[in-house]
Length: 309
Ligand code: ADP
Ligand code: MG
Image (cartoon, rainbow, N blue to C red; front, top):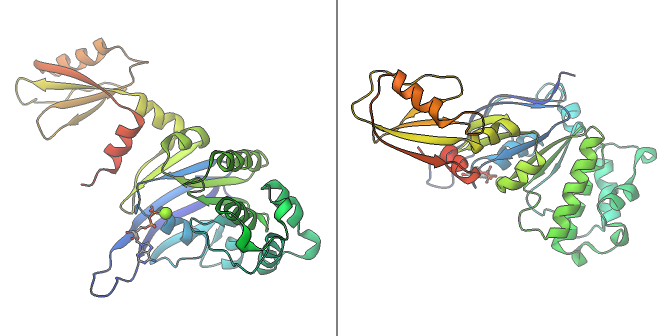
């Protein structure tokens, strides 16, 4: 096993186009490593391709091109082992209404070839708080309980990697807490966790590393700490007197020329005084006509990264 739980290379997916419509790519060449033992967040707006990516990992969607390696097993070379290494809690509530929770777990365990002696359905039901409902008709389960059951199903074969697709979208606070407690505990026990969410604060709180995808491609990939450093950053916007002959250069300052001719200098205001930024501008021979600052927040940077081009 390498240090990565998941390795993705050149991953592409184009769904067959609906009648009369051209096929539109959902993933356009993703390269991504997900470190073993991490809680990894996959962020992106609706339609970005998050579920497509996850469903390919889960073996539920067939990729169009590229390579996926799960726990060291290439999906195309060792499909059985790569499937056994991963458990997925899908976004949709796709449960069989005829199975009570305990029975559903037994069926799932059977599908994954878990021998009877190694099954621990009751333990898993307890973990997700469904022990009282073990034999209840599935149709009597509330939406929240169904979600718990989906999590339980993802765990029956003791996967190394647990994937949760929008686990907290539209769930109540109690269930959200239960989910996060479980995620933390399973991660402490060594399980790699991948989750998608569009709640930025949630990602900030839960994830060690974050990838942001938009329109089927990766637009950012960093540790949460680094991303937040970027997010905590301040931007100084300079309107130069003339078109600059060269751009300011200094460690810790990111310079961007905006379409309106202004220069946006992003820096970490807790680590660098504005004076240093201004000095870098002057050193580049730029005369300042006007200057203002922008304080980036989480939402801004996310929008910036996922803005349609
Ligand atoms: P996300 O989970 O980030 O919201 P999805 O992976 O669900 O994004 O969708 C990515 C794109 O692929 C969207 O444009 C969506 O309409 C399209 N798509 C998803 N599933 C299918 C499908 N089964 N058939 C055709 N198009 C699909
Ligand atoms: Mg989705």
